[in-house]
Length: 84
Picture 1 (tube, rainbow, N blue to C red):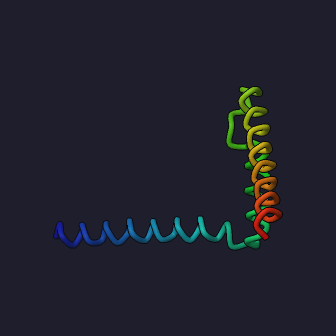
Picture 2 (cartoon, rainbow, N blue to C red):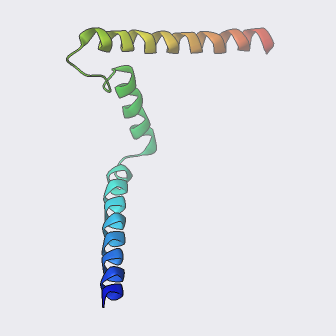
């Protein structure tokens, strides 16, 4: 009987994992890919992943990420003007 109980327990665990995956994926299906990407970019540049209790870290992250974006855009423009 223990092997039968073990198989049943494994099936129950597998079903729970499948339901969790469906629940997790259904949250993202409601939005378009463009909207999800725009929200992730906004949160990234607003430093939402940093702890709010350290304002220096938050502002440093925002400034660094904005400087990186400006550098990347400048590099693309420079390469396009130089080689195209």
